[in-house]
Length: 162
Image (cartoon, rainbow, N blue to C red; front, side):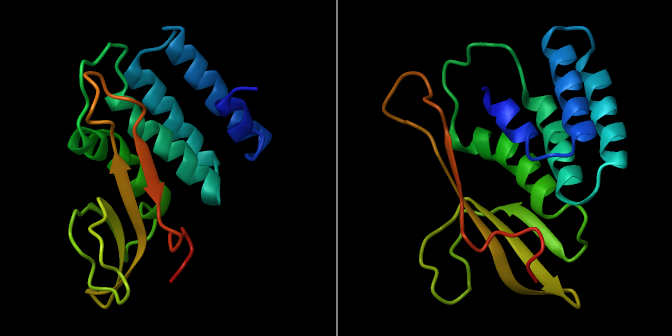
């Protein structure tokens, strides 16, 4: 069973079937990237809750997908092209008080000493209150080609936490 198949088991059958059809049509070059994105956005209009976020995350990732053998991919490219669109769609797209951002700074929240590559901040009355999501992105810098990048999301990451 593929990763896509496993993920689809957790979604409503109509939504998961729609995602699979769109992704396969795009992969098989039956539809253009633009058409696939439009179909995913249309599908998201019928989805609710987390399912809507998953569909929008896939749509946000499509512009960065290219069938090429990239010689080397850097952490900043992974962050800007893949992590940011995905994280923004999953954790901040529907909540006006959330700001998903590429960070690489030390958070001001108590107990954090590292510099996460990605943060989702919660705002109240236009002022930052706390960070709810911390992400680290790592690539294998020792090889000539990029190994599979790792994106780790902190445990305080929740679509519904306030």
